[in-house]
Amino acid sequence: MNIYKKMIKCALESQKKAYTPYSNFNVGASVLTDSGKIYGGCNIENASYTPTVCAERVAIFKAIYDGEKKITKIAVVGKENSLTYPCGVCRQVMKEFCTDDCEIIIIRNEQEYKIIKFSEILPYSFGPKDL
Image 1 (cartoon, helix red, strand yellow):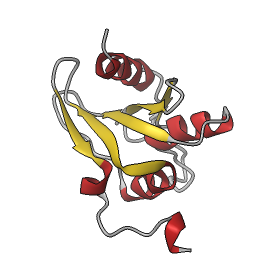
Image 2 (cartoon, rainbow, N blue to C red; image 1 turned 45 degrees about the vertical axis):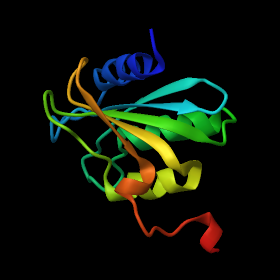
Image 3 (cartoon, helix red, strand yellow; image 1 turned 60 degrees about the horizontal axis):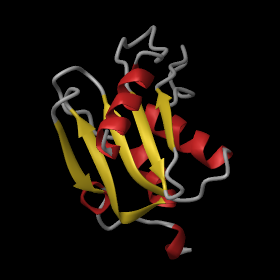
């Protein structure tokens, strides 16, 4: 199984674990680190909405907690047969741990997905090098 299929499988499995009693919009994500490990994440909602955490950030934070420092690929899945892109907050978090050529895999379903570079979804961004 190639790395894209592994990441898609992880994101789809993670999506099933989402806690979304308010929106019922389940999102799953997976990240691949430069060490070759894959981490999954799901969105977790809260009644006051502000503390809600997106799937992409859960996966990234799990990797960072585990000692990883660089994300090389990120996969995201939302509504079935639809392309769900990372929100602005997730894109800014990605900027901290991804390079411009990090691949973002936007999953429509298990067989169909789109691959774009991180620089395409957050051009002209502010990041660690700007401080």
